[in-house]
Image (cartoon, rainbow, N blue to C red; front, side):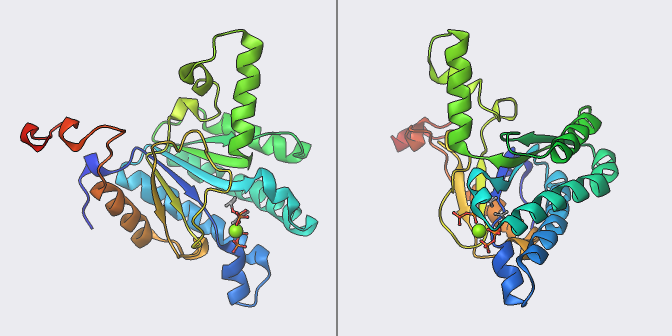
Length: 242
Ligand code: IPE
Ligand code: IPE
Ligand code: MG
């Protein structure tokens, strides 16, 4: 499906949901779904690069996911460390810059080290930025920014607060995709989603592929982003439409 380059979102964010259900449907342990999810993410990173997306932000582990059974949490930590060490060279080759967004509190030294190493190894890459939200919550992000702002003594404005959010350098997502059929944000990019286009898919994350990605991009391309204005005020609009 050919989509004009100017209609491709600059920044896509994805809530990669449905791994557990994908595995349960196959009588596999939930962790098998998480493992397959990593394979899909690799493909999606590549597909986004090919389509001209500059930033991909993915929700990999939420502040609330600590409430899961301890075995699942520790398996998720392991999957992250193993995937990073296995995929780092390829990501470097593909020009992907990795950034981990979220609190480092509660993470083991081993996990923290592997996040640091991956960020350092890919810091000079510029073809696509991959923000991995890990131990991330939108409320954490806002509180963190508010604390930093208060400590700085700077006046509280939308701009001064936004500047201290974890995603500031990569900007707000243009399109947020959630797989797995739930229609909620689950504490993902709460501030940054103010004007994002939303796309919900029934597809479980381990089944996600280029077809669903293109469906999301196509839906995005057909939306009119008015940011509070009228259609007639938008660039390229014909004035008689007022
Ligand atoms: C998303 O898949 C991955 C994480 C939250 C870590 P889930 O594990 O939430 O899968 P479902 O929603 O139970 O199917
Ligand atoms: C959101 O999925 C978090 C991630 C995908 C990492 P959840 O499965 O944790 O969300 P809820 O619990 O259904 O809202
Ligand atoms: Mg879920």
